[in-house]
Amino acid sequence: MSQVVEHIRSERAAYLQQLTELLAIPSVSTDSARAADVRRAAEWVRRRLSSAGCTTVELHETARHPIVYGEWLGAPGAPTILVYGHYDVQPVDPVALWDNAPFEPVVRDGRIYARGASDNKGQFLPHIDAFEAHLRVGGGCPVNVKFLIEGEEEIGSPGLPSFVAANARRLACDAVVVSDTAMFAKGLPSICYGLRGLVYLEIDVRGTARDLHSGAFGGAVVNPANALVTLLASLKDARGRVTVPRFYDKVRRPSPAERRALAALPHSDARLRREIGAPALFGEAGYGTLERLWARPTLDINGIWGGFTGEGAKTVIPAEVHAKISMRLVPDQQPRVIARQLIAHLKKSAPKSVRLTVRELHGGDPWIAPTDHPALQAAGRALRRAFGRRPVLVREGGSIPIVADFERILRVPAVLMGLGLSDDNLHAPNEKMELDNFYGGIMASAYLMEELAAPGEQEPDRGRSARPRRAGSSAR
Image (cartoon, rainbow, N blue to C red; front, side, top):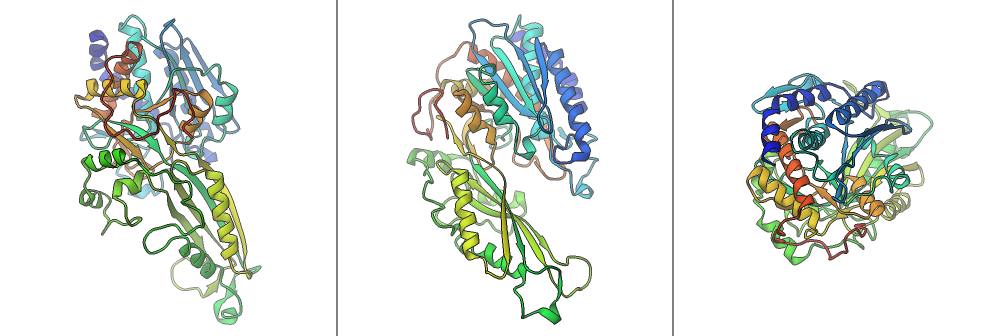
């Protein structure tokens, strides 16, 4: 292993150059005008897997953007891991707030700035680099490795679950490895054992056939904008609690041990408030900030538009207005059930003088893992060797819907060893990746492959959070 470590250290410049090349490709999956660029990124990943040493590399077409699959099965009898990542990225708006062009990567103060730096190009590439290092100087990889890198994560991975189900035998493995989460703090490695699920809806409220003069018609019709904001305001009370009937029926509460473990993490409300520039924090009453972020469900308005929004005044009653709503869910809430409950509540509450349409855009199941699983324990040892500190166990408030699908379909555990930080500006201007985390991630991945091949002593389970579960059972 010492040769692998030295090789990784000596190849830092090459790894950074490869990351820079991939970040320069504007693979925005939501933008149809960028379809050729998204495919260019897929081709880049295909070539990188081939040059790293995969013996099979393929592009699998979907309705929109291809899935890249690669494998190396040269370790008979050893465990097999499936590494998941995504090469597509978020849009870059508002461009004026970027300090550099979003697809012209810049290294500054030990960080690389570009769209996709942390989400997710700078997090999945380390696993390819680590795999290559084992082949180049380690005499072969200690585990069998399969790579599944998709191009539709930022649009909800519409084609991936069916691909995984159709190829379950080919994707068979002992663990799925994902780096698409964050460390709890800089220099503090973390293993994520829980993700919130998601329901995302769009609401359309229509009143009249055309916009109306508010002086000529105001008082004779319901203003769709007024109706919409009244509906939205009714969804939560003043204490931050969702008012949709039966919304909390299936919420699984953290165990006392997990609550103690959350309380022991080095979190500061004041530091978080300063980091995000908020006058004050707010959330569901009766719960601490980390519990609200990770273990409680939410409902948020993500966008609202309609009527006149230009400069100056225009006295108009809009014919239609719109809003987008997301709900983050926790075990054991089911996205389809929650969506039906919200839609029923909206339809019951809407005035009869408007036409209400609600569309489900996408969603995903919540996920939680047993923290004493051998694969998670191996990841803990690998992260400690790479970063010099024992990792902490965390949940995340975001969603990676395919993680629950992996466990449900492949019936193996998922290991989430994130390399990002909470201030990486994911989905925002000036996205960045700490280069120490990038290089440390290569080392951690290389150690993980060794640890999984020859499991060591189990790490203490500090604040175990999940219910006991047999290996490979569903986390849904």
